[in-house]
Image (tube, rainbow, N blue to C red):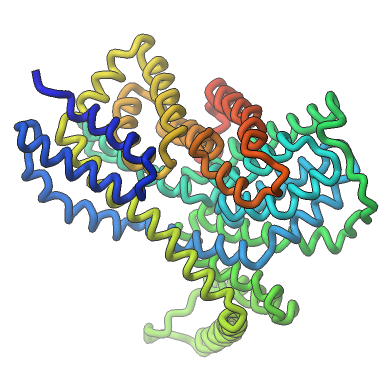
Length: 516
């Protein structure tokens, strides 16, 4: 009887990752070792390695994944332009006078930052440096305060646009296509990034609501855990609230609205987001607010009017009105580009541009290196019979499709204690999802269930990234044990959110079905 090399390979991957080696190199090393071992034992066809180049090329030119660098750049620029600080300060003054108000502020700011930046680490660190000391000064329970900061930061993974949802959209679309081919269909449906974003909108807001209800209920039952602010601060004026909240909301509407409305592809929407983030950063860099507003209006007018009244100068029947419109469009574009260039020059002199590009390059390289090596790992895993074994396990689960889905969700949840969401998404899900879809499970609903499950991996000890981020940013009086204990209730709340979504699938399927 031959050794179950596929299972041993998966166990070896987890073991080597726990040793602390860089993830991409670990995945590649394990895949190489087991490919050679399987070949020597006669369990692996080494000719399969000839598909490596094609698989890598497919990842690098994937139109969904190529949106990731631009979304990362948008988030990094917003994070470094200190929008988080202004939001936290304004929302804290707005809600701080009520029990649990500061906690609600942290969660709402986390939701706004999630929809505008989508970068978990940046959000957790920003709130750990600004909001956590304020909550501690006002008598908040250290465990509750730490848990709220960690959890609010992870909202960037479920509220679009997020890197997790973009990767999931690609993985789920491929799995959905595989399932349809297996059913003998030749008219293939796909799952777009827009559908995934739309499906995650309501569940993401549901999570925000669940967190806020929990904080307010705990503040009412145990007033000492989340008291009102004892500092003498003035309520912000309507103008201050608008100045802090309106710009990021407009950016969110521009990015998500263009994707959900079918106006722009994810790459185009990410480009809009990056330009919008640059304009928002202009205020911090000393560029005139009036100039930034005018440039924003110029781009908005150009986008709307040029869509309604397009001009094609290459045609022979262009009228004088067409040439006039072309001149107006060119003037608007030149003015807006001039303002953007001015902001970029100021960002270069300030050092913000270099730091943003370096951070974007680092994050993007890490994500793509992991995806590429995971593609290598998956090729070897499938070649060793892992895909057939996973299919057999799911098909033999008691309870049919429901039992298989419960097993899959529990498996993903447990792996989240040890593996990153990228590794789970691109290594495990491609072999786990097709049989579930073949059993009749709605792929859109399944995508959101898995997204919330993977979001939990940021909070689960010992390797939850949010825990590490907060440990580095938290005051010295906050212990690691308090951070770990603080996130436990919020992990429970996420399980409750998954249960609600399980009982009411329409929460995930209504919006994408209405829009698409």
